[in-house]
Length: 113
Length: 266
Image 1 (cartoon, rainbow over the protein chains, first blue to last red):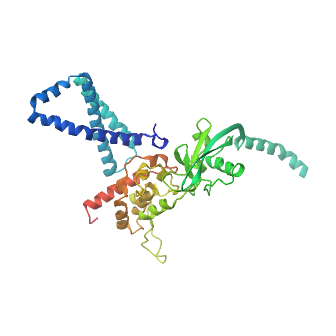
Image 2 (cartoon, chains in turn purple, brown):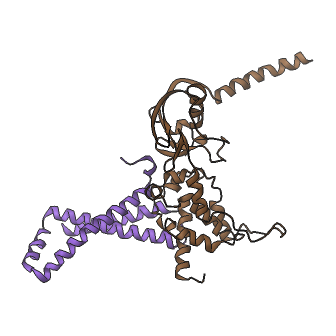
Image 3 (cartoon, rainbow over the protein chains, first blue to last red):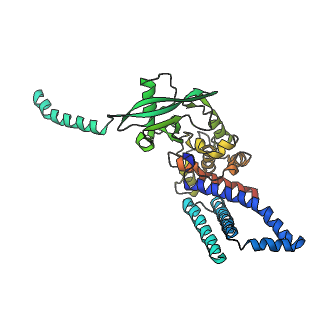
């Protein structure tokens, strides 16, 4: 349960940015290890690539693309907040970052299925 | 003559009195179930009180009712009762609020209230938090005015249209109630963090052309525990009772300190 002082859009944008960052930090070592198989063990890499045809893996990829997009656009929002002249539309910027991320990950899913 | 005057004013007075009773403080037949934190620096627990519900009633009224009618040993702090002094902030149903301007009707949940001392500060007794760390950080952030003139100099003319003055004006109405400090999760996680109010004060001084301490302010707010610790969660701006935005001030400090780092001459 979210504590009362945290139940507002910018705190939710903050926690989404943290969670997506942590999830990507966990994903990246695995990602690089799989890529390294291209040099060390191509047959095993092909096995991994076949996995991507699985519906569950496609859904996981959707989540991954969403996390990546939401972290990129959330990060750009924070950079704009801190380095560009201040604008009062911070909640709109956070909502736009999430909206664009949903659009990108949705487009990815439509192309993948 | 006098009798005539009384007879003519009497009905109007009665009408005014009944109207006043309709709008003013009238008790209802309901009670509020109030949990009040009792204890000291070493800990404590919630104690329950039944307080008569009234049509117009602030959280401070509820606390005062308990202290005056049920338990005179209840400790709490208040002064002006009109939202100017910043003394009476407490945690109300999990949110830090100025209790003198918070109406019970706006925060009541199922006729229940939970009132506790401000978060992120040591407790002196019951609802009275120790504000020393809050004001110590206010000074640590360079919040004491650094004058450029003496009393013998003429008063400096400041245009309210200048951008710097407008930046300062946007944050100057802080009453130091500590609501933003209690709302901030970074303060909760890092006791060295200066906090939204102190950094907001630093930003207003930095934008005050009469202040000559800009370099010391920048040094104070950019070291460990300074403005760069802020995670832009916005709890401070969300809950500030005066509708200020310390988050805006902190973003300004981040921008100025980063530029100062890249261009040390400025």
